[in-house]
Length: 228
Image 1 (cartoon, rainbow, N blue to C red):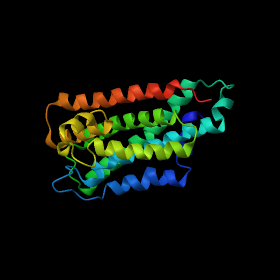
Image 2: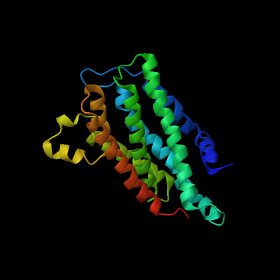
Image 3: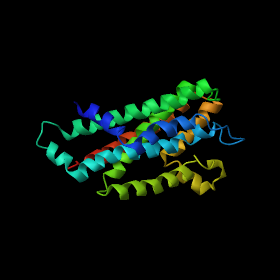
């Protein structure tokens, strides 16, 4: 069994993970439309928050491998740190991409007003890359699984509020609106605005590029510390 296959099986072994990976995303499909905000139905506005929680739940498995000494034992095997990490992240991205596809096209079948579903799916996947990278970087600084998780929960609520997922950035004072652009959640919200109102294709591409940059930067930070 490859690392990739093992990670996929392990991710669905835990009951809490099953809830995060299946029931919660499915529930997003059926939440109603806001009036006048959010522009998308509530489930799609707050799906970005759920993706952060899913990302930390998945990447905590990497942290657990460090805490239990799994990587120390693997260090004597012909398995490089890069291969271990890349196969973990590839499995996690596949899981989250499947979630995004379920939520978007489940919403299409349910009749939710998603405007441009395919582009919304691309936006969610780009954001998922950033969310996974942020979670990976976060767990790399902690040895205790519970401390890492509950600390990240606090971070999620902070970036959800300041990034414009829970409160429109237009309601912020100017100085706070400038700070908001530092968070990936802000760019998800900007991308969702573009999905609804449209605009130049370059603007949508710019939002995705910013999210990819977040993913690259935090992936580097998270992978610099070898798990041993």
